[in-house]
Length: 439
Image 1 (cartoon, one colour):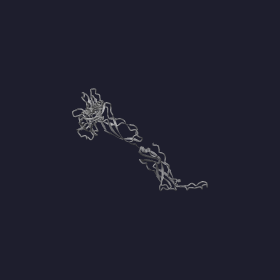
Image 2 (cartoon, rainbow, N blue to C red):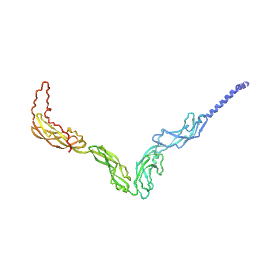
Image 3 (spheres, helix red, strand yellow):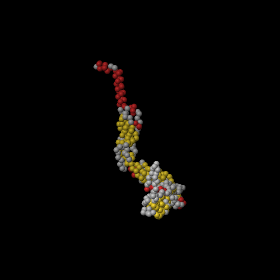
Image 4 (cartoon, helix red, strand yellow):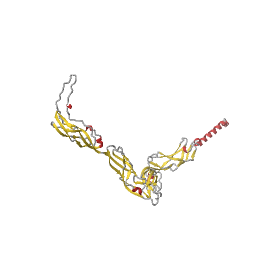
C-alpha cells in the first residue's frame, strides 16, 4: 500500500499537469466538433436548366443550416460561405408548365465545414417549355373628343412576336399600343410601348415581346376625307444606252388614303419616291415608299412593289457594204459598178451599235454569165439579230470580158522569178467600205 501511494505521489506536479492538458485538449475537440446553426439565409440557385425551357423563380431561401466546423473556421463564415442549388439536368419540360419537386443541395465553400442539416430539403419549381407566337397589335385610342374625325390607325410593324413559357404566352390575349387623342386635332405619329394583357385586362409578366415598341400613326382632323387613288411610280435617271422603259407593274395598283379634306381633294394619284434606273437593264424590282403629303396617311401599306422591264430599243441604221462576186471564172475579167451598196438594217439598238461593219458584204452571183454587160441583183446576209430593210442599189452592173494573156518577161539571172497564182487574177472580191452615216 505504501508503495502504491509512493508511486502516485512521485513526480506529482508533472502528472497533474499532464491530466490538465489532456482535459483541455478533449474539451477543445468536443467544442470544435459540436453542431452549429447558421442564422442567415442562402438563395437557392438553379443549375443545368433544360434547353428551350423557361424556369420559374425559386420561392424560398435555405435557412437553419446546421454544420460542424473548427472554431477558427466557424468564426470566418458568411452567407457567401454556403451555396444552395437544385440540379435541373435531365428534367423534361411538360406542356402546360407543371411544377416539379426537386431536392435542394447545400455545399460549403470551405471543405473543413460539414453540412449536417438545412431547410427546406426540396422545393417546387415551374419548368415551362419555351414557345413563340405572333399576335397582331391593337391600338387603344382612349376617349376621342367630339367633333374630331379620326382615320384608321396605322401600326408598323402590324404584329409582334411573343416568346416565353408556354403557359404565360398562352395567357396573352392582346398586344395593345395605347395613344391619347386630344382636342388639338394633331396627327398621332409616335413610338408606343406594347402591353401584353390577359382575358381580364391585366398585364402578363415574364413574356418577351419583339419589338417592344411600335410606331402608331393616326390622322386626326376636324373633317377626314378618304379616297382610293391609283399609284404612279416616279422614275428618274438615264437607262443604259440603247434601252427604253418597257412595262411597269405596281402592286398594289391603288391605295386608300385618308387625311384632311382639303389635302385629299387635291390628290389625283399617289406617287412613289423616286426610283433610280441609271445604267439599268432587264427586270428591276424595288420596294418604293409612297410620297404622301404631311397630313395624309395610306391605309394598310407604306410601300408598293414596282417591277420595271427595261428592254432594248428598236431602230434601223444604214451601213455601207462592199461587194463580193460569187461563182467567177478564172479566164474572165469582171468590172463592177458601183463597188459598194447602202444597206438598211433593223434590230435592237445595242445590236446595231455593236456590229462589225467590216464583215458586212453584199454578194452578186455571176454564175453562167457570158462576156458582156449584165445587171446582177445584190444579196445581203444580215448579221444575227438584224433584218435587211433595204439595199440601195438593189442590183449592180457587171461587165465581163475575156481576160488578157499574161506576158512574163525573163527575169535577170540574179533575180528570183516571182510565182503567179490565181489570186493575182481578178477575183471578183471588192473591199468593203465603212458604215454610211445615218441620214
